[in-house]
Length: 151
Image (cartoon, rainbow, N blue to C red; front, top):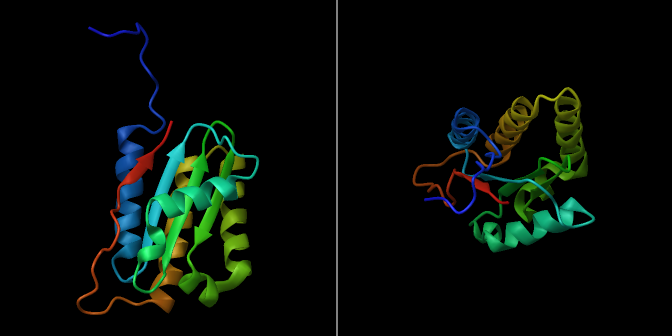
């Protein structure tokens, strides 16, 4: 028995979730870096970067050995996002890289190709992580690859 007679619409269909998890796994395959994707419907903050910082901390992303975690935060209904890289990766790529990735996402989102945009961004972040933090024998996957779905 359900309390509510309506079906809650999923933020992302299962096929899209699987596709994005596969993109994360592929991007992390040749790097010690970590990529997390957090998707929610609305951003309750004025600046999505503030929300991304809160999530980054709550997920313990600053605890990777080389400080090379990257969070993609997406608020689908509000059409907002933020990309947050930890200290180690930010020192290597600088502001220009993050701005380029934000432009890539905006381009895809304007064309309503949300999943394709996220996938392309994950791929490029993975390539950058591979360049600056190549996989070395014994590197562990320090953070889960699953997508975190908020409300």
